[in-house]
Length: 346
Image (cartoon, rainbow, N blue to C red; front, side, top):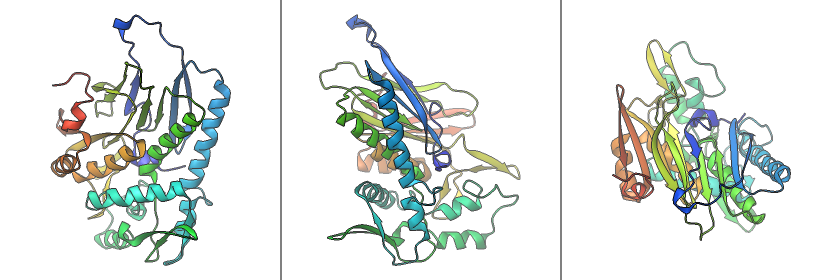
C-alpha cells in the first residue's frame, strides 16, 4: 500500500476530531453522519451534517480515493508514480493537472526548506528499513549512504508544460519519486472539491494526519480540533484549535521508529546526510487554506529542526505549531498566525 505510514501518523492518532456545540446558542444538536474507510495505507473519515444519500456519497468518496491511490501509489505497478520511476533519464512521463500541481508544490517547498522536503529519497528510506526493505541489523555503511544520496535530489526533476500537455522528467537514471508526504493533503482537497460539486457545504474531512473543515460563511460556530500530545503510549490532548474553512496537517516523530543497537532510529531521513534526524523537534502542525499546502510544509519543517523551522515559519508567515521534547517535558511554540486559531489564546 501507499507509504503514508512512513511519513504520517495513522488517523485518529495525530488528530482526534471533536465537535463542540455552542451552548450559548441553545440549538438542537445536528445529525452528523460519519463515513469512514481505508486509503493509501491509512484511514479516511468524513463527517457531514444532515446527509440523506449516505451510501451514494460514501461510495463516491471511496471511488475517487481509489483513483487517487492508483495515480499516486508507489506500490501499484501502473500508477503514474511507478511509470515515472521506471523511466530512464530525459524520458518524459505524461501527467495530468492534479499530478502537475502536487509536484509543483513539492518542488516549491523543497526550495523553501533548503531541500529537507524531498520526494526523491526512497532509496535512503529503504536502506534504513522504513520502505520496501526490512529493518537492517547494522548501520548502513557510509559508502551505501553516499550512493543513495547520489540517487536522490529534487533538482533532478523537471516539470514541462507545453502545447502537447504536461510532463515530468529526470536528468539522471535511478531517480524515483514517492508522494506519500503529500498524498493525504491532495486526497483531502480532492474530496472537498467532489463534495462542493454535490453542493455539500458543511463537512470535516480527515485522511491520515490531515484534516479540512468547511462551513458555510454565515455559520458562527467553528469546529474544534484536538492536536494530540506527541507521545506513543496513549492519546491525550495537547492543544485545541478552532477551524472554519481551513486545513491542518501534522507530522510527528514519535510513532514510527525502532531501536538499532540501543540507538533510536527515526523514520524521518535528512536528505542532506542520508541519516535519520536526531533533534528534539517531535511534532509540527501547519494550518493553511488548503490541505495540500499544509501537508507540504509539515514534514519539511520537522526535518529542519526547531530553530530553522521557527525562522522559516516566521519568514514565510506560516501558521505553525512546533512541539519539542526534552526527556519527558514538552515545550510548545506557535507562530503569530497559528495563535489566532488557538481555543485558549495565551
